[in-house]
Amino acid sequence: MGLLGRIRGWFYKNKLTVRVYGDEFTVDVSRFARHLTEAQVWLNHQIVADCTNFIPFQNGALRSSVYFPEGADGGAIEWNTQYAHYLYEGEVYVNPKYNASGFIGKDGMWHGWRGKKVPGGRPLTYHTAGTGDHWFQKAAEAYGDSWVRGVRRVAGGRG
Image (cartoon, rainbow, N blue to C red; front, side, top):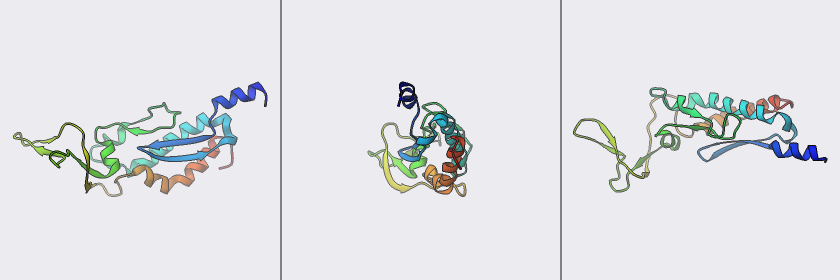
């Protein structure tokens, strides 16, 4: 392989990976290296679209908070609300000192405890049918094969 081939190899990845809170979906695309950036952008946006109906919904803030910390062509997707991680894990997190997630104050409003919280051992209740925890895993089970075909198509291979 000549110098130009080696330089191109430094700029292209052999696998596309998307991480969502520690879970991963990886597609081996080494033979499609010239179009990987387009394929990564397509995969990121398709995963967001396919996850949307699995994401808990109350007022839409969580669903609309999605962003790409490494850019649209990077390999990470996150939802950026204070409670996104808790909803993704599907477990009530509590203040270890009080074994409670919060309290109702004298003003009649719900207040959360400050400081680090730990898993409390109780599952969260989701009120919108079809939504719940680990929405990325659910979308990957439902759409993973189409993600692979789509990445191959966008990267220039057979779908």
